[in-house]
Length: 86
Image (cartoon, rainbow, N blue to C red):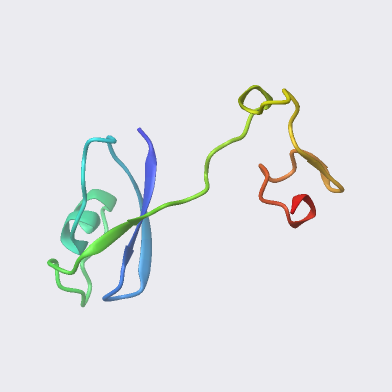
């Protein structure tokens, strides 16, 4: 199952949980239940938003040239997020 990061504006926390792509988590209560966390002082009804994260792995086969990006730190050191590649 894929991992997703959710952000709760009410408490400023970001929590990672795993669930099916077809599932949706919309509240702090649902998120805490899924992650096994206590609610704390945050209302269970507080909305959460799924964050778009850059946790994808770039492989050479997914690039048009067939070669992974390079930088001074070494081959594909950071999946293309390196400042040296900008």
